Image (tube, rainbow over all chains, first blue to last red; front, side, top):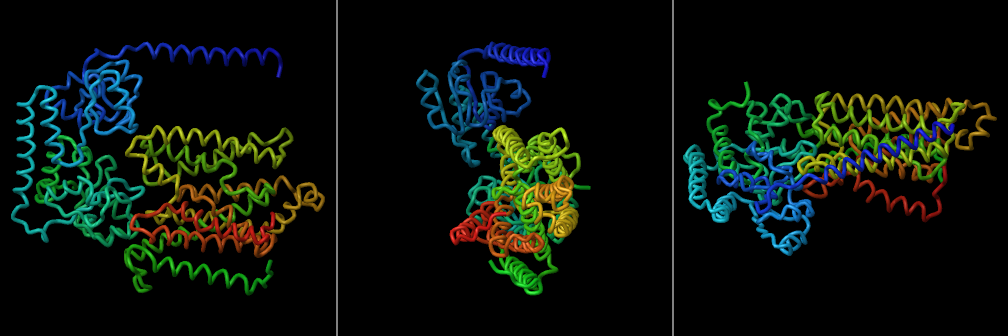
Length: 295
Length: 321
């Protein structure tokens, strides 16, 4: 290598380093939004806050907080349960609401600098009702919270009215596919199992004492579910699923009863939209003619 | 070391493979008898056993080739950065929801990543004269592998919670295929490659004596190396594309077979193919039936194969390539 080439190379390295340093310094100058607001570290908490009309008090949210659309504009402070602690301290919010913390020392650090931390476990539909009440008190929107819970209960009651007359053994068996690689479904320890039951379905994996078990596709063939619920992102139809080796004979695929138009957020995110999810699922289970997902 | 006649050796190994297939057919979450072969569950399990055989054979033969070619006992199918290359490509396609080839996206991306990594390693190792020095090849492979591996760690770290199981599933390997045509393509490439490398067995014998002696014996060293590299890479790339990363098979099966049957590649290659196939099928039956939830097959291959291999080593029979 000649001397000129070498010095050019060196110059290039120096220039790119300088550019890198500049970008980092400039990025660091971004000032966090107003001090004294609420930071939500879970998408379901963010949803409840917005429903309660407290959306404008949120000054920080996670990468997962994508609903309602306004939530996307809130500055991000990290991922679900693992916030960037420096960013939070710089923000000095009044209150941090979290579903859980990945690092167990985070709450102490925050409290140590005078920030109130409340951990809300929202893992069942009952937890959702309780969280709505609690957040209503915290944000001074108790009236709206009561109203919201009444609406959620109304959704559940409407769903129940669809299947109340059907005896348990005649309710459709449902298989939920959370992920296809590997095949992951819902065991009876997950709230999603309760969602299926609240919608009048029978979870084929209800016998498994697990949260989200990975199962062998043979097991699904053996379960022979009457309805399949798959995420709307994958857009898999009964034809796609029937093309899997050995799956062609499954009852749900023979009869084209694949529900693939429900957003997974409606039944996988323990938030206020669960009630809508239950109702929509019940409608698809008991009025397949009116809400046919295919054709 | 034992030296049975070919007319005894191959039928025995073949019987072993059939027995492991029978065991695998009988074990699983659902009880199955031979009459149920045509049923839906029978189809699923047959597909899985066939996949196991093909992947096991491909990885074992690829490992034997790499060990002969690089004259290094630690060489295995992923030694030239295949795993990290394929891993980066696969993780990218999972995380970014790439779906350009529909159901084929993940295998195609993984295959392209694997082959790209090997070509990069070859391009780095190739000297001005066009020769590929073995030591440089090995070093380039290890370093490219580590660099890509750190990229992979970054991607795993960045992947959102809901994608993480899929990425990890791929990294730990699984024989679950949903697609007959993918299995057909992989089977075809593997069988042809194994046939060709069997044909090149005597060249591998000469090559493992060292490159200079091999050249003196009239072997076109560089051309043979390129052909063997291509065959081993193709097989590894296909295996990785179909089933993700299944470790350890390509390292211990060739060593174990060599320590029992000796280093003659003319019988090592077909024996590796048969033993590797049987080993992976057995490991998968364990992965499938030990617990209700499946265990990643990579964990089983290491857990079952490791102690067996150590036993062979301890008995002082670990013949070097």
